[in-house]
Amino acid sequence: MSVHWPDVVDGTWPAAKYETVGPFLVRQGLGGGSRVSAASRMGDVTATDIDAAEAAMLAMGQKRIFCLRPGDEALDAALERRGYDILDPVNIYACPVAHLTDTPVPPVTAFAIWEPLAIMREIWAAGGIGPERLAVMDRAAGPKTGLLIRHSDQPAGVAFVAIHQEVAMVHALEIMPDHRRRGLGQWAMRAAAFWALDNGAQSLSVICTKANQGANGLYNALGMQNVGGYHYRHRV
Image (tube, rainbow, N blue to C red):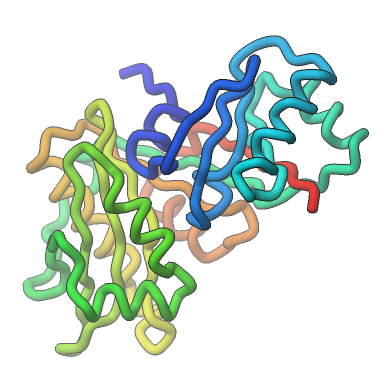
């Protein structure tokens, strides 16, 4: 199955508004983070086009931030010349859903729940995922769920899963500090895969920063494949 990853990201973690400005798709994130606030290239770009995209982002009350993917090398260099710094290079991992449904999730370890319970919102908030990012989850139009992960009869973690064009993507996976290093990230991903299977997805995917060694190690250990990546450039 051929996947256009930018569409999956936008479909499962959508911006509040999209505006076409010349060859750029400009996103309005309303405080929901870089992923929903960055402009991305759709065609050939001139210096004037970059000026217009910058003006549009500033008019939205956002900082100037661009998402750079493979093929955007000329734009990347142009932004560097303008004084833009690199921000958050990420990896995209994916695997067939069946790859992670070979082992049952232990009883009472994971629950698929939507709308999120108060305790789920509290765990997300403690991890820096506040109302603006919860609003992103609310905007996702396709099948979606929250995952509540439990350990030793206590709430221990959360995640958000949504599907776009038969690809499920996991976002906002957060394990509470006292419950880390107990394999709960693995069970969260397997629970996401079982939910994805039940809701018609063929693939499971996730994004994490290249700097997050623990998350990269988890997805590699699960046998997920690195299928792409991107980075941002921003200018304050």
